[in-house]
Length: 170
Image (cartoon, rainbow, N blue to C red; front, side, top):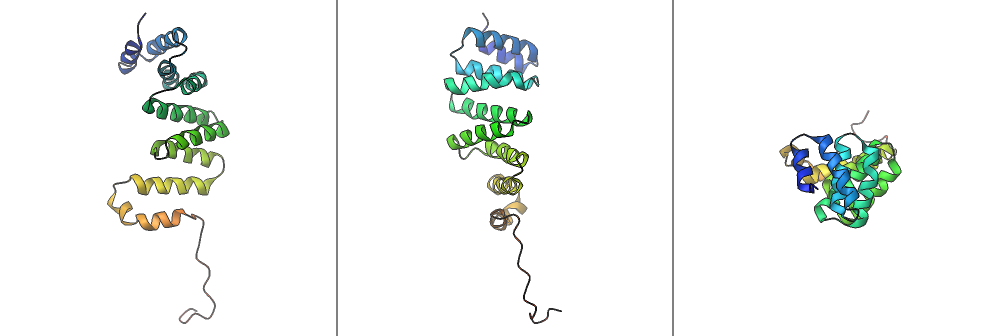
């Protein structure tokens, strides 16, 4: 029977359906191999068959993965739930992923999208602004990073109206 390397070579060559079929067979033959389950989930996502990916992602996370694969599985599962409109499930996955990998910028950005989907717009913008200042090398962003981080704490805040007797105010 072909191995996972063959399936990954097929994927890299653009033979996505063939790779997926091989990974499904490998996942059935190796039900306790988290890496195979993860690659199988990913192969469904690539084919835009997100619903089929979910159980493989969940099984992969339950079985255990390398750190890199685990990050990818949290991102894949959370993103899959989000794109299917399962926003609470996506939120749960992203929170679990961020608890394990609090400095993972990709998880944080996808979580921000989920917050937006849940109607938590200020929290979503706050998270995105903080990610922007933490990850951007853009000179303009970095020159205003302190202000952006300050405003991110309350994106809806405005200054109060000045008192009516301010000199020069008419």
